[in-house]
Length: 116
Image (cartoon, rainbow, N blue to C red; front, side):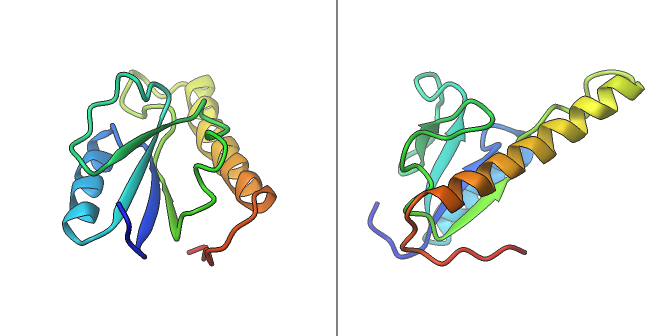
C-alpha cells in the first residue's frame, strides 16, 4: 500500500491490536503488523504481516514507518500475578521496547519518528 501514513504495529493479533489495526486501515494508514509467525497470521488486506522474534523485526521492517505502536508483551490475564509473573510482564514490555528503539536508531530512517 502506497501511503504517506505508514505504521508498524506490534501486538496486532491481540485484543487491542486487532481493533487498532482495523481502525488504522479505515483511517487511511498503511499497516505492517509485527508477528512471531507471519506465515500463520491472518490479517485482512491491506495489513501486512512482518516477522519478528519479540526483540528484533525483519530487516527494513521499521525503516519506512512514520510511526510505531508497540502493544505486545507477556499476557497479563494468564493466572495469578506472582512476583515472577510480574517480572516477566514488565521485562517483556521494557526489553522489547528498548529493542525496537535500538533497531530504529540503527537503521537508516527517512521518516521522522516521534516518541509520545
